[in-house]
Length: 145
Image (cartoon, rainbow, N blue to C red):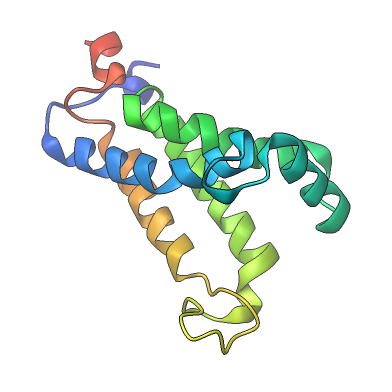
């Protein structure tokens, strides 16, 4: 448990987890609260289970990981665990929704949908958090130290 929650005092972990948390938070807030043009929890669950045909538990976990995971990363609480959850989430999103669209984002609107380059960036940031920990000013460091 100590290794899982231990965190150094370097700035690298801070930069990684804050970047990851700030990137994912708006997506989670769309799904959980309806902020930033999102549909909120009920609307998102309805879309996931009705349109995308995901099992309810998968839809629920997507919302929880994006919303609570991003907030936890911002605080540095359970940084490694949430980063692993982000990796699993992004791999699932790539292979269920974006792999057919290729690598690149759909900047020109010419593709059928978005590519998976964004998701690979999130995976890279998450992997770095898994290896490094939350860094300076993380709750992980406070509780494990």
